[in-house]
Length: 494
Ligand SMILES: Cc1cc2nc3c(=O)[nH]c(=O)nc-3n(C[C@H](O)[C@H](O)[C@H](O)COP(=O)(O)OP(=O)(O)OC[C@H]3O[C@@H](n4cnc5c(N)ncnc54)[C@H](O)[C@@H]3O)c2cc1C
Image 1 (tube, rainbow, N blue to C red):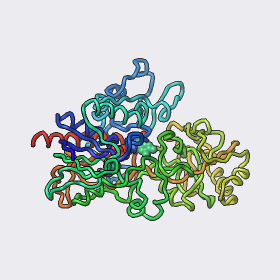
Image 2 (spheres, rainbow, N blue to C red):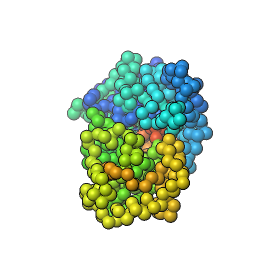
Image 3 (cartoon, rainbow, N blue to C red):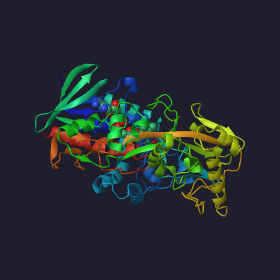
Image 4 (cartoon, rainbow, N blue to C red):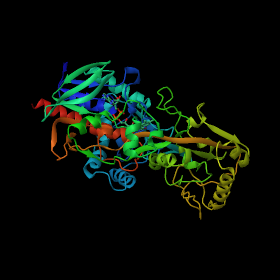
């Protein structure tokens, strides 16, 4: 049996932020991590590390990172004003996002970034994916100019170092299995620690142990038939335990329980993410492609927007296709614009000098239908608008369904390449309901449950249907900090 003040369950970004915020209230903090050290850190450790937060220009970015003096003016750093962040969040969630949660997310996002920096995290300009040199000047696009140094692994490592330096004890290979609840307040958690049952008693518990994306049975139950067949992009440890434990004692479910973040993903990727090659299965360059299923048909507007705003919902569209699969097809004109992982050794791809040869190599595809689709598409492209991948260029198609709204190029320049994809699930949107200002979990009568807090993927009500890229880590930092602070202050005042 162990005793602590604040018990944080999970060791991803949200949990580490909660642990740091609670510790800064001057109370004892203990962290429980289901995974062994080498697999610890949750989805946060798999993340690319792009960060979406509100900022007005380079001066705000300098609160978060050191921008060399000569680059402050020579680079177009773009902006993501609070209004723009709200617009993006409201638009992609079809105006469903919880008003108060999204307000806190948006208005506290820049502060959270500066706070992460003060806790040892480092951020650098995201030149690799979110910028382009146009007429001799570097421009950012997509409203995410900064990335965690070392990506998700770098972020988790730096926060882990700080947590340990501040005297927080981390128990690895320790899976919380239930909450210790006296009928009125939560006073700890029962765990399986290195195979043995161990109880941890605490004055407050913060649940930050992710969603249920790794659990095929829950995916089928809540997301629907077929979701057990999705590949998991990240950790194998997020089985929905935190949600189950909270619901078991009467916590109120909240948000889009049938919703999830899911993307186009290497068709033959392993069952879970691979920390040694975390980005090798990404297939995010599809706005430059035609996505075609095995029946030879297109099924989405590949160019509806920058990938940031469509990738998280298009995975579900791929899952709906026959064999839960499709192809992304490119020609030589855009090859140099593809993300680096398209050149990885793990890709499943076909290359050919004619469309007919390409079709012949695309396993299982209806070749005649594929060629018809491509020829109709080529004829529908508006050639009067020029192509520019760094803006929504409006180079669209006319008279076909689905249309392609931007970056439409005829497939006419060999060699052609087709990449096989399936659906990769990132995380689930359903969660528990919290008091936004304190992170305290509420029960089904909407009364706060004494001693219980939640953060990160476990908080329901923020994302519905879709998600703007780069929001997960920032949301984890904002609400991790709120929950850690809420729990730490409550304990301090006891
Ligand atoms: C491949 C990939 C790329 C991504 N890229 C980005 C990006 O660039 N930018 C961005 O903002 N977001 C990105 N995301 C999303 C982002 O990673 C998540 O939104 C975020 O990490 C969620 O943080 P979290 O702390 O809530 O959960 P997690 O980081 O998943 O942490 C959950 C923790 O709980 C632990 N746990 C689970 N069950 C138990 C239990 N019963 N007892 C104890 N511990 C338990 C897990 O082991 C883990 O440590 C990406 C995700 C993936 C998978």
